[in-house]
Length: 288
Image (cartoon, rainbow, N blue to C red):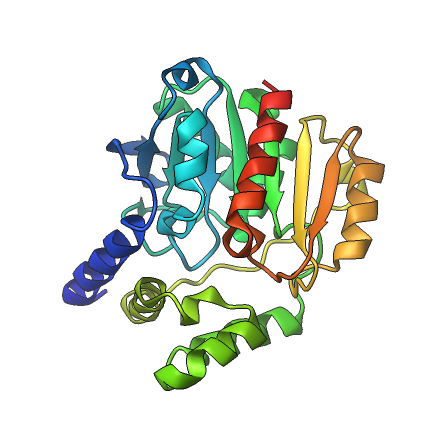
């Protein structure tokens, strides 16, 4: 890894973090798989210190800066922890692979234990959604609820998703005048938020993320989940088939709530941050 590029990437991350709520603390948690860097936010409401905290897990190839549209609203009511996943760009340091589902569950449980958290509302986006779903299946003891935002782990990742990722990355090099049109076509806010665009482009140059696509949970595995579950899918998601999963998940997971957000693809919590934040907080409050 090029140290200069890494420092430039982390500076770009800090510019994205600055778009959201300010972190009140940062800490490193030692686990069997490496050092996990965690950002703590809030609570804005003093009563929030007594509420079950929220833990956010980002998608692959990114870092916890991606939660900038969500940290202000969530941390206004609760303590929020945003985790940099080891093996992805960010400030965590991976020493052992986290590809096996049982290892991923152990890593996350060790991280929560290191933070002194006995009970949490866990929320994950994309690959982070798979990590959250995997936790609900394999190590649910600390989980008050799980929110899955257009997650992995429900279907095999198809070619259409990888094509979208590649085209979106290529579009970051487009002339400025074309970016708003491409952002709308691709439903990719990276193209029109300069700080995000800089972070993504530097992340690709500074890091080599080699992470296998997560195997989806079978119907049998999904039916073992007993944690309160909230699934939020984008109507035009290219990662999953929304209508299929909004029927399947509540059928297999007792009491699960599943909703489709219109006018978005893979990033409902970014494209419709105010609405998704409101829904997430309501769901968490109902499951405290």
